[in-house]
Image 1 (cartoon, one colour):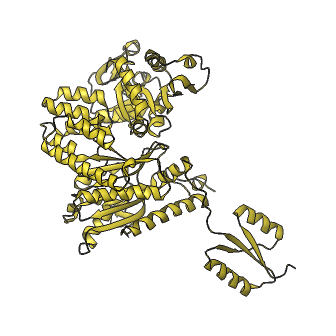
Image 2 (cartoon, one colour):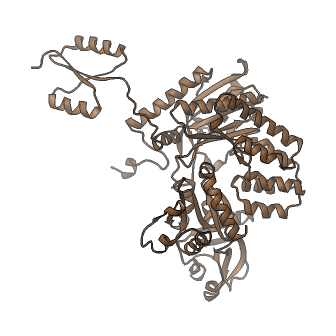
Image 3 (cartoon, rainbow over the protein chains, first blue to last red):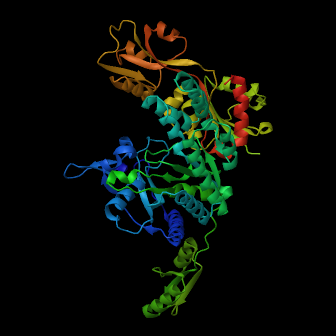
Length: 396
Length: 209
């Protein structure tokens, strides 16, 4: 046997029974939660055209995608993002539906990451998207859905951090600097690289007020109230004021729902993908050094498909959530339904069938034993966690 | 109070990193006689110090295995990880440079072979200048490459330039100045902000940043 065939390609994994069961429970709970809130499930294909992810503002980096060529020579990719395909579906197949349109999905995402970086190249993403509403209430509701989703999964010690892309955008639009310089400013703010940011701002020909705001932005994070108080001391313009008011309204709305303890604000948060246009957010927990979920508003995305439709949404990283639940010892011992093993003697198939049907109706797990040797049956039952062995007919 | 885990790069920056921690009042006694231990607790200061190879510091920080790290900018540029780079610590200063044989007649040539321990930095630098190069990844003694004809030029860290001169090489071009940086895990900075911010402020005061 060729050894390579035994191993897996980098960045993918087999999920065995326990992990599969746990993932299924997580996904089941999420769907249950979302359907209760009026979201409708859709599914997009694993294969999409490469060009879908390379147009306009939503450009994903080509070297992050798994590419393949079909028989006609067209360049295809394995779905590298969850939102773009849903946006395509909405614009091309759901134009005439009732809006606001609330969509949810659970799908695999494929991204080519740096080799041997300990990152998954195939990962599970569950998300919701709300199309057709431009108000702050829609953003607020989406963040509330994210909080309720994480709570429904048994997480409690988490934070949803909210940012506002309009603030930085408004400042950068007012500056007479090159695109490269703007990109560098965004990157330095994103990385909270205070010293390099400061020296770059000193070099650039910008007015002192703008310089002061840009210098302070990476530091403006914490409780909504604390951040708003710090901002009040800065020389901000009307555009920034409006963007901050929107952010404040969302925070008030979340607090009104009783979820104030789960939110914080970071005005230095920048959008990881090019299509975000307003509120953005990400969720994390103390136990895990990585992000559990992220999302935001993307009002211009559907224009690429000829539809002017505002939208907002988020995605949860299922594998990260599984890790967080495990790390926080919050993975409650799933008691689950009783598990019975039916053992048939003398080929009494009719009785076995009746008993199996009766037990299944009560919600039990019922397995008909394929083993005959009593000792082998006992060992099997112990190792599989069977609650009770039910014997039908007389032992010979 | 939360314990803060900090990764220090073994090698040229380790001693200076420990000195820096001492200078802000941290009791580094256990670090000085750690023997072969890789993890050393500093319970008085609620710190845990992890010693790792320099290229691994960004990985430990990004994955949240530690909350913060001290590492050279050279390693950060090569690794390109998602983390917060909050302070230039003003030590371990040197430059990334392109160097080659003193007998090399015209630099750059239309298609050069470049030997380096830092393939990403080299590739990004030459790409930004629109130059086509072939990168040859090496693990050490990069200076040897032009001398034996393996490569036309090298991209490496230059401190004094003595090693280059002794081997008949010269600097053609500087790429970027580098020094030690304080980096943070993006989540830790938010979830352990008070403790981390306190440390940053004390370090910033010392480094004058």
